Length: 432
Ligand code: 4AD
Ligand code: MG
Image (cartoon, rainbow, N blue to C red; front, side, top):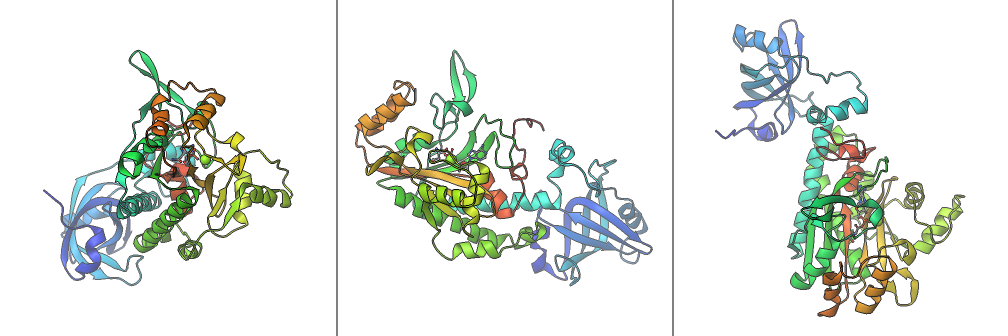
């Protein structure tokens, strides 16, 4: 059996009789009439039953429906200007599928830890539902953006022998009789792929053993990583700007209701589609931090608070480029005019959300890259395949990584990344 009618389709079915299958969110009984808040996974709607329209048995069934009981409803779709969706269902038949007793999440305030322990149930809540829908639309926007630009999706492996973003955040794992890591980034593989397909991207889970209990850090997160042959730093900035704008456009077009559920104001988001982003160098960003009265020395990496100061100076995502080479990974291309800095960029989201994109141009010269690998204390043998890319037809190339969950948190206006995916993984959160 395939269910044909969902709440999301009902706007076009006014005055029609429909059958819906879902769950009771809550039931309110006002003397003669019974109201049920009902959900079917695609949306939420009010179902109204009166003893004139439904059998006595069905009316009693509905009156006694407990929270999250599974139920089927047959009824007529009518306009209802007072309801949030503008429509409601006048019930004709109610059919109990399974009864729920003592649903642990009630309308009262629960602490976040309690809700995170019950994440498998919490995701049914309207707010969590809205976030999952927005996440889905962001993913779809990303896929369409790269597809429309003729990129080839070339997914990277998760088991890897190579570190990419520093040894301190590697998860190790046994791999038969050798040690492997869980991938921190698919970038190195995309660098190989872009010389095969021109414009490559991967989009999948990545892992960081970061014991950071912040609102921005997960141990497992999804990253989309485009990599393009014959592209430079400026090209990667343009590509990233376009991506962020495409994401916002799609969410504004498709998630009006979800953004409303989240009380997300959209004025700031709308302004972002309008034009290019402010671009400043690391040096200029340092000056902004120092001018704000916060101590900061050239050569330090930005912490979360520093990123907030920088991004608060602008109302739109801010591109910061040319960081000190000393705080960046081995693969970044040194600026030929000033080898102390690299041809990289980070994009900081506004409203204190911090870095959502990191990337830039890669070192394409064999000798320079080999020296960087050695200077970082890495074993050139492990990177021989990566060095081969510089041996056989080396070209300038660039790319970036966008962290999906940070992007969702920003666009949905969430206080923490833990609500951005189905079952988030954090230092103290492996279950459920
Ligand atoms: O800046 P990062 O570490 O860059 C890379 O991994 C590059 N190899 C990407 C590339 O050029 N292909 O990570 C990129 C993005 C960050 O800007 C952030 O959005 C996200 O990944 N990110 C995290 N998101 C959640 N939790 C964490 N622990 C994250 N670490 C990075
Ligand atoms: Mg970064």
